[in-house]
Length: 357
Image (cartoon, rainbow, N blue to C red; front, side, top):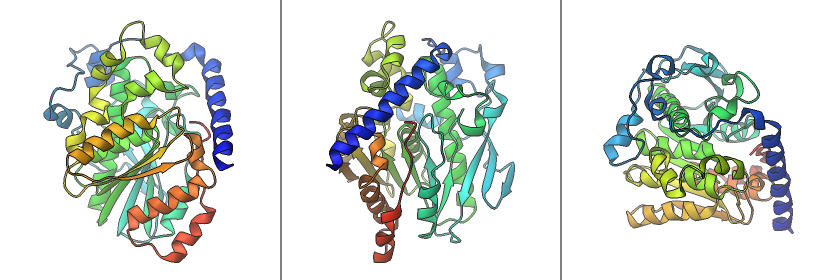
Protein backbone atom coordinates (compact mmCIF):
# COMPACT_ATOMS: atom_id res chain seq x y z
CA UNK A 1 0.00 0.00 0.00
CA UNK A 2 2.74 2.47 0.95
CA UNK A 3 4.59 1.84 -2.31
CA UNK A 4 1.40 2.52 -4.26
CA UNK A 5 0.87 5.78 -2.37
CA UNK A 6 4.50 6.72 -2.97
CA UNK A 7 4.10 6.22 -6.71
CA UNK A 8 0.98 8.38 -6.73
CA UNK A 9 2.83 11.07 -4.79
CA UNK A 10 5.78 10.98 -7.19
CA UNK A 11 3.52 11.08 -10.24
CA UNK A 12 1.75 14.16 -8.89
CA UNK A 13 5.03 15.99 -8.36
CA UNK A 14 6.46 14.93 -11.71
CA UNK A 15 3.40 16.36 -13.43
CA UNK A 16 3.76 19.54 -11.38
CA UNK A 17 7.38 19.83 -12.48
CA UNK A 18 6.46 19.34 -16.13
CA UNK A 19 3.72 21.96 -15.84
CA UNK A 20 6.18 24.39 -14.31
CA UNK A 21 8.55 23.81 -17.22
CA UNK A 22 5.80 24.67 -19.70
CA UNK A 23 5.00 27.79 -17.72
CA UNK A 24 8.60 29.06 -17.87
CA UNK A 25 9.38 27.76 -21.36
CA UNK A 26 10.18 31.27 -22.59
CA UNK A 27 13.02 31.57 -20.06
CA UNK A 28 14.90 28.40 -20.99
CA UNK A 29 18.62 28.82 -21.62
CA UNK A 30 19.59 27.36 -24.96
CA UNK A 31 22.51 25.03 -25.59
CA UNK A 32 25.99 26.53 -25.54
CA UNK A 33 29.53 25.50 -24.63
CA UNK A 34 30.67 28.76 -23.01
CA UNK A 35 33.72 27.11 -21.42
CA UNK A 36 35.25 30.45 -20.45
CA UNK A 37 32.31 31.07 -18.13
CA UNK A 38 33.03 27.86 -16.23
CA UNK A 39 36.44 29.16 -15.20
CA UNK A 40 35.49 32.81 -14.66
CA UNK A 41 35.91 34.01 -11.09
CA UNK A 42 34.33 37.34 -12.03
CA UNK A 43 31.78 36.96 -14.81
CA UNK A 44 31.97 40.59 -15.90
CA UNK A 45 35.75 40.79 -16.01
CA UNK A 46 36.58 37.25 -17.14
CA UNK A 47 33.62 36.61 -19.44
CA UNK A 48 35.65 36.61 -22.64
CA UNK A 49 38.89 35.24 -21.28
CA UNK A 50 40.14 32.03 -22.84
CA UNK A 51 38.54 29.06 -21.14
CA UNK A 52 40.11 25.83 -19.98
CA UNK A 53 39.15 22.30 -20.86
CA UNK A 54 35.97 21.12 -19.15
CA UNK A 55 37.17 17.51 -19.40
CA UNK A 56 38.38 16.13 -16.07
CA UNK A 57 41.73 14.47 -16.81
CA UNK A 58 43.43 14.21 -13.42
CA UNK A 59 42.88 14.71 -9.70
CA UNK A 60 44.83 17.96 -9.65
CA UNK A 61 42.31 19.49 -12.07
CA UNK A 62 39.49 19.01 -9.59
CA UNK A 63 41.53 20.19 -6.62
CA UNK A 64 42.52 23.40 -8.41
CA UNK A 65 39.06 24.06 -9.83
CA UNK A 66 37.37 23.76 -6.43
CA UNK A 67 40.08 25.50 -4.39
CA UNK A 68 38.78 28.26 -2.08
CA UNK A 69 39.45 31.82 -3.20
CA UNK A 70 38.31 34.09 -0.37
CA UNK A 71 38.68 33.65 3.42
CA UNK A 72 35.66 32.29 5.35
CA UNK A 73 34.77 35.60 6.96
CA UNK A 74 31.04 36.40 7.25
CA UNK A 75 29.60 39.68 6.05
CA UNK A 76 27.11 39.55 8.90
CA UNK A 77 25.94 37.24 11.68
CA UNK A 78 23.00 37.01 14.01
CA UNK A 79 21.41 34.34 16.14
CA UNK A 80 19.58 32.63 13.29
CA UNK A 81 21.63 33.37 10.18
CA UNK A 82 25.03 34.11 8.73
CA UNK A 83 25.76 35.79 5.39
CA UNK A 84 28.88 35.40 3.25
CA UNK A 85 30.37 36.85 0.11
CA UNK A 86 30.54 34.19 -2.59
CA UNK A 87 33.95 33.36 -4.07
CA UNK A 88 32.45 33.68 -7.56
CA UNK A 89 31.14 37.02 -8.80
CA UNK A 90 28.31 36.72 -11.33
CA UNK A 91 26.44 39.30 -13.37
CA UNK A 92 23.47 38.91 -11.00
CA UNK A 93 24.37 40.99 -7.96
CA UNK A 94 21.89 39.21 -5.69
CA UNK A 95 23.61 35.90 -6.39
CA UNK A 96 26.99 37.14 -5.16
CA UNK A 97 26.18 36.84 -1.47
CA UNK A 98 24.49 33.96 0.27
CA UNK A 99 22.61 33.62 3.50
CA UNK A 100 22.65 30.51 5.68
CA UNK A 101 19.82 29.76 8.07
CA UNK A 102 21.20 28.54 11.40
CA UNK A 103 19.32 26.32 13.84
CA UNK A 104 21.58 26.21 16.88
CA UNK A 105 21.67 23.12 19.07
CA UNK A 106 23.55 24.86 21.86
CA UNK A 107 26.46 22.47 21.36
CA UNK A 108 29.74 22.74 19.43
CA UNK A 109 30.03 18.97 19.11
CA UNK A 110 28.52 18.54 15.64
CA UNK A 111 27.40 20.81 12.80
CA UNK A 112 25.38 19.66 9.80
CA UNK A 113 25.26 21.68 6.57
CA UNK A 114 22.14 21.06 4.49
CA UNK A 115 22.00 21.63 0.73
CA UNK A 116 18.47 21.85 -0.64
CA UNK A 117 17.20 20.58 -3.97
CA UNK A 118 16.99 22.43 -7.28
CA UNK A 119 13.97 24.74 -7.50
CA UNK A 120 13.40 24.50 -3.75
CA UNK A 121 10.58 26.75 -2.57
CA UNK A 122 10.72 25.92 1.12
CA UNK A 123 13.44 25.61 3.73
CA UNK A 124 13.75 22.35 5.66
CA UNK A 125 12.50 23.76 8.95
CA UNK A 126 11.31 20.46 10.43
CA UNK A 127 14.49 18.73 9.35
CA UNK A 128 16.64 21.40 11.01
CA UNK A 129 14.65 21.53 14.23
CA UNK A 130 14.66 17.75 14.51
CA UNK A 131 18.44 17.44 14.37
CA UNK A 132 19.12 20.58 16.41
CA UNK A 133 16.98 19.15 19.21
CA UNK A 134 19.33 16.18 19.22
CA UNK A 135 22.53 18.15 19.65
CA UNK A 136 23.43 18.80 16.01
CA UNK A 137 23.53 22.43 14.89
CA UNK A 138 22.06 22.75 11.40
CA UNK A 139 23.16 25.29 8.81
CA UNK A 140 20.92 25.50 5.75
CA UNK A 141 22.95 26.69 2.79
CA UNK A 142 21.47 28.55 -0.16
CA UNK A 143 22.37 27.26 -3.61
CA UNK A 144 23.15 29.83 -6.33
CA UNK A 145 20.10 31.58 -7.80
CA UNK A 146 17.72 30.22 -5.13
CA UNK A 147 15.67 32.00 -2.47
CA UNK A 148 17.03 35.51 -1.91
CA UNK A 149 19.88 34.86 -4.36
CA UNK A 150 17.42 34.96 -7.25
CA UNK A 151 16.41 38.13 -9.05
CA UNK A 152 13.12 36.70 -10.36
CA UNK A 153 10.94 33.58 -10.24
CA UNK A 154 12.94 32.00 -13.07
CA UNK A 155 16.40 32.46 -11.57
CA UNK A 156 16.89 28.80 -10.67
CA UNK A 157 17.21 28.06 -14.38
CA UNK A 158 20.64 29.72 -14.17
CA UNK A 159 21.83 26.98 -11.82
CA UNK A 160 21.32 23.96 -14.07
CA UNK A 161 20.70 24.34 -17.78
CA UNK A 162 21.78 23.56 -21.34
CA UNK A 163 24.72 25.96 -21.29
CA UNK A 164 27.58 23.65 -20.32
CA UNK A 165 29.94 26.29 -18.97
CA UNK A 166 27.23 28.14 -17.06
CA UNK A 167 26.10 24.96 -15.30
CA UNK A 168 29.66 24.03 -14.35
CA UNK A 169 30.23 27.57 -13.06
CA UNK A 170 27.09 27.43 -10.92
CA UNK A 171 28.03 24.06 -9.46
CA UNK A 172 31.53 25.34 -8.76
CA UNK A 173 30.07 28.37 -7.02
CA UNK A 174 27.88 26.10 -4.88
CA UNK A 175 30.86 23.95 -3.90
CA UNK A 176 33.04 26.95 -3.03
CA UNK A 177 30.19 28.44 -1.00
CA UNK A 178 29.83 25.14 0.84
CA UNK A 179 33.55 24.88 1.53
CA UNK A 180 33.44 28.40 2.95
CA UNK A 181 30.71 27.35 5.40
CA UNK A 182 32.75 24.29 6.41
CA UNK A 183 35.88 26.34 7.05
CA UNK A 184 33.90 28.93 9.01
CA UNK A 185 32.37 26.21 11.21
CA UNK A 186 35.81 24.74 11.77
CA UNK A 187 37.02 28.13 12.99
CA UNK A 188 33.98 28.28 15.28
CA UNK A 189 35.33 25.20 17.04
CA UNK A 190 32.91 22.47 15.98
CA UNK A 191 34.30 19.00 16.62
CA UNK A 192 32.56 17.31 13.70
CA UNK A 193 31.20 18.73 10.47
CA UNK A 194 28.86 16.81 8.18
CA UNK A 195 27.06 17.61 4.95
CA UNK A 196 23.73 16.37 3.66
CA UNK A 197 22.10 17.14 0.35
CA UNK A 198 18.91 16.37 -1.51
CA UNK A 199 18.83 15.80 -5.27
CA UNK A 200 21.32 18.22 -6.93
CA UNK A 201 22.06 19.55 -3.46
CA UNK A 202 23.39 16.07 -2.74
CA UNK A 203 25.68 16.28 -5.77
CA UNK A 204 27.04 19.52 -4.34
CA UNK A 205 27.44 17.93 -0.89
CA UNK A 206 29.33 15.02 -2.43
CA UNK A 207 31.71 17.31 -4.32
CA UNK A 208 32.38 19.25 -1.11
CA UNK A 209 33.05 16.05 0.82
CA UNK A 210 35.47 14.92 -1.90
CA UNK A 211 37.44 18.18 -1.77
CA UNK A 212 37.17 19.37 1.83
CA UNK A 213 39.05 17.28 4.39
CA UNK A 214 37.29 19.03 7.27
CA UNK A 215 34.08 17.19 6.35
CA UNK A 216 33.66 14.07 8.49
CA UNK A 217 30.41 12.61 7.12
CA UNK A 218 28.30 13.04 4.01
CA UNK A 219 24.72 11.95 3.35
CA UNK A 220 23.49 12.01 -0.25
CA UNK A 221 19.71 11.63 -0.51
CA UNK A 222 18.18 10.65 -3.87
CA UNK A 223 21.06 12.52 -5.47
CA UNK A 224 22.37 12.26 -9.05
CA UNK A 225 25.98 11.10 -9.14
CA UNK A 226 26.32 12.22 -12.75
CA UNK A 227 24.46 15.39 -13.80
CA UNK A 228 24.84 14.24 -17.41
CA UNK A 229 22.99 11.00 -16.67
CA UNK A 230 20.36 12.99 -14.79
CA UNK A 231 19.67 15.00 -17.94
CA UNK A 232 19.58 11.89 -20.10
CA UNK A 233 17.42 9.62 -17.96
CA UNK A 234 15.31 11.72 -15.58
CA UNK A 235 11.61 11.77 -16.35
CA UNK A 236 11.51 15.51 -15.68
CA UNK A 237 14.54 16.36 -17.83
CA UNK A 238 13.26 15.52 -21.32
CA UNK A 239 13.03 19.17 -22.31
CA UNK A 240 16.58 19.89 -21.16
CA UNK A 241 17.87 16.79 -22.92
CA UNK A 242 16.10 17.94 -26.07
CA UNK A 243 18.14 21.14 -26.10
CA UNK A 244 21.45 19.32 -25.60
CA UNK A 245 21.10 16.08 -27.57
CA UNK A 246 21.22 17.62 -31.08
CA UNK A 247 24.72 18.89 -30.29
CA UNK A 248 26.26 16.04 -28.30
CA UNK A 249 25.85 12.50 -27.03
CA UNK A 250 25.56 11.31 -23.44
CA UNK A 251 29.24 10.34 -23.46
CA UNK A 252 30.15 13.81 -24.73
CA UNK A 253 28.09 15.40 -21.96
CA UNK A 254 29.68 13.16 -19.33
CA UNK A 255 33.07 14.36 -20.53
CA UNK A 256 32.04 18.02 -20.62
CA UNK A 257 30.61 17.80 -17.12
CA UNK A 258 33.35 15.58 -15.73
CA UNK A 259 34.35 18.17 -13.14
CA UNK A 260 30.90 17.96 -11.52
CA UNK A 261 30.47 14.20 -11.89
CA UNK A 262 30.88 12.36 -8.58
CA UNK A 263 31.99 9.25 -10.46
CA UNK A 264 35.16 11.18 -11.29
CA UNK A 265 35.79 12.10 -7.65
CA UNK A 266 36.03 8.66 -6.07
CA UNK A 267 39.60 9.40 -4.98
CA UNK A 268 38.37 12.18 -2.72
CA UNK A 269 35.33 10.22 -1.57
CA UNK A 270 37.54 7.37 -0.35
CA UNK A 271 39.86 9.56 1.68
CA UNK A 272 40.52 8.55 5.31
CA UNK A 273 38.10 9.75 8.00
CA UNK A 274 35.23 10.37 5.58
CA UNK A 275 32.08 8.32 6.14
CA UNK A 276 29.49 8.21 3.37
CA UNK A 277 25.79 7.38 3.35
CA UNK A 278 23.49 7.05 0.34
CA UNK A 279 19.70 7.17 0.56
CA UNK A 280 18.18 5.74 -2.63
CA UNK A 281 14.63 5.33 -3.88
CA UNK A 282 14.21 2.02 -5.67
CA UNK A 283 11.47 3.55 -7.85
CA UNK A 284 13.22 6.89 -8.42
CA UNK A 285 12.71 7.95 -12.05
CA UNK A 286 14.62 11.21 -11.60
CA UNK A 287 17.89 10.45 -9.77
CA UNK A 288 17.89 6.84 -10.89
CA UNK A 289 19.66 4.53 -8.44
CA UNK A 290 21.77 2.82 -11.13
CA UNK A 291 24.22 5.74 -11.26
CA UNK A 292 24.56 5.72 -7.47
CA UNK A 293 25.19 1.98 -7.60
CA UNK A 294 28.19 2.60 -9.86
CA UNK A 295 29.69 5.03 -7.35
CA UNK A 296 28.93 2.72 -4.43
CA UNK A 297 30.62 -0.14 -6.27
CA UNK A 298 33.68 2.00 -6.99
CA UNK A 299 33.92 3.13 -3.37
CA UNK A 300 33.62 -0.46 -2.17
CA UNK A 301 36.35 -1.63 -4.54
CA UNK A 302 38.59 1.14 -3.21
CA UNK A 303 38.19 -0.17 0.32
CA UNK A 304 35.49 2.20 1.50
CA UNK A 305 32.23 0.84 2.88
CA UNK A 306 29.48 3.42 2.46
CA UNK A 307 26.21 2.93 4.26
CA UNK A 308 23.35 2.45 1.81
CA UNK A 309 19.64 2.78 2.54
CA UNK A 310 17.31 1.58 -0.23
CA UNK A 311 13.70 2.60 0.20
CA UNK A 312 10.63 1.30 -1.64
CA UNK A 313 9.79 4.78 -2.90
CA UNK A 314 10.65 7.21 -5.64
CA UNK A 315 12.14 10.70 -5.59
CA UNK A 316 9.77 13.13 -3.90
CA UNK A 317 8.15 10.34 -1.89
CA UNK A 318 11.29 9.94 0.20
CA UNK A 319 9.80 12.83 2.17
CA UNK A 320 6.47 11.19 3.05
CA UNK A 321 5.42 8.59 5.62
CA UNK A 322 6.81 6.03 6.29
CA UNK A 323 9.94 6.61 4.20
CA UNK A 324 10.76 9.93 5.85
CA UNK A 325 10.76 8.27 9.26
CA UNK A 326 12.90 5.36 8.11
CA UNK A 327 15.38 7.74 6.49
CA UNK A 328 15.48 10.05 9.52
CA UNK A 329 16.23 7.16 11.87
CA UNK A 330 18.99 5.83 9.67
CA UNK A 331 20.54 9.27 9.11
CA UNK A 332 20.38 10.01 12.84
CA UNK A 333 22.13 6.72 13.60
CA UNK A 334 24.73 7.48 10.95
CA UNK A 335 25.44 10.99 12.24
CA UNK A 336 25.24 10.36 15.98
CA UNK A 337 26.25 6.69 15.97
CA UNK A 338 24.54 6.09 19.32
CA UNK A 339 21.22 7.98 19.47
CA UNK A 340 19.00 7.30 22.47
CA UNK A 341 15.79 5.30 22.25
CA UNK A 342 13.86 8.49 23.02
CA UNK A 343 15.50 10.24 20.07
CA UNK A 344 14.62 7.40 17.75
CA UNK A 345 11.04 7.36 19.02
CA UNK A 346 10.67 11.09 18.40
CA UNK A 347 11.43 10.54 14.70
CA UNK A 348 7.77 9.62 14.23
CA UNK A 349 6.93 13.32 13.86
CA UNK A 350 9.66 14.03 11.33
CA UNK A 351 8.75 15.69 8.00
CA UNK A 352 10.51 17.44 5.15
CA UNK A 353 9.21 18.83 1.89
CA UNK A 354 10.33 17.80 -1.60
CA UNK A 355 7.29 19.38 -3.19
CA UNK A 356 9.19 21.28 -5.87
CA UNK A 357 11.63 18.57 -6.99
